[in-house]
Length: 342
Image (cartoon, rainbow, N blue to C red; front, side, top):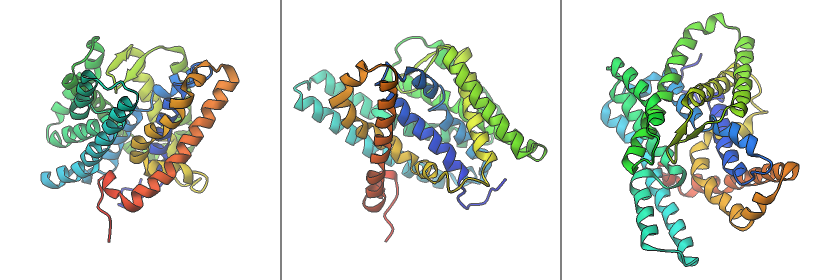
């Protein structure tokens, strides 16, 4: 298992699967007549896999958490909070602009948008501040192992105990603690796997990973639960947590098991994984160009026609992200917390 600083492909494969699953989930929710089953599968793991991967990453490269506090915070602020602020302002301006043009701009709408802007996050940017809080909690408890375990245990059950509308600050806390639980499970799992890896042939790891993914698919179709980090709606934890973990760990294991193969065939997946942060932030706006004019038509489609249209829309949304990402990387790297190199 390589722990060098050189970028390897398989972590990007994991993130690529995760981010494309999020894009596809956001697309398929507009096609209830033919893609609801797929949306249910995707929503069972598409967000948790990023938190689990965060823990795996911490186990793979522990030195990133062994730096001075000032350097650690500065890097995380640049990586998470700068994009969070800039894209939050963009999202709010876009939403308020649409409300103004459609003559729906009211005082309550502005107040609601300010609350989202300042606390809960508007759109997919909520993920950035949540991951920032998770990493800060992990860093600050690096010498307090019992505190980590207790916090993770509390975070794992807290969302399912709060069966009511969450206040903005409580929603922020629940997201971070629940995500931290997945982070810690990923961290502990990979520590265990690293010790057992020499006794597990790659073929068995791949087979085990694929079987976990298959089990996750079947279980997600059979069980009804909700894991909506954005809105803070969580139900049926006895099914939701194990299924999301089985799915996430299965994908990570499968990707790691083929790390020495398939690089060319998986270049596109690697690209989206490498640019997962920008895809997370850009794709909801791109999707609007399809759902705003055609949303009602999408909702009335059924059967194979609905599913085919969902897949075509997904492909178009994913493809349109590429030129936007290229522009940001070339001219506006500050949008992802980077300074343009001279």
